[in-house]
Length: 95
Image 1: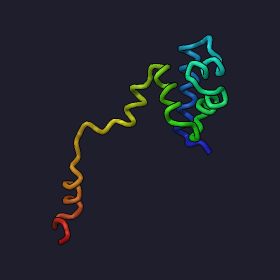
Image 2 (image 1 turned 60 degrees about the vertical axis):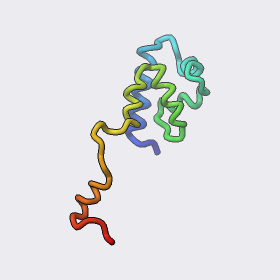
Image 3 (image 1 turned 180 degrees about the horizontal axis):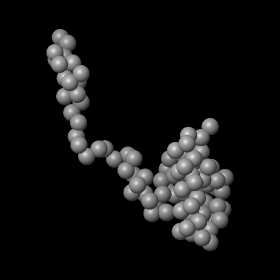
């Protein structure tokens, strides 16, 4: 079973490939990425068994790596986990 978000990502990858590399079929683009055609087909299907690094290579080639990288960037606001625990327990830590 493929999660919906991965399936949608695969469809977007296919659209970007066709737009940005109209001369490339799946096999040709797979060579560009450095994966087998079978693996690339799985990427376009949004298969969760494909290594995340392969998805990142595709994103880089399609010039969307910044959007991909944003998933792994910490939020701008810093959160002190100790302060959060005080909010959950206003009496302070247990002794």
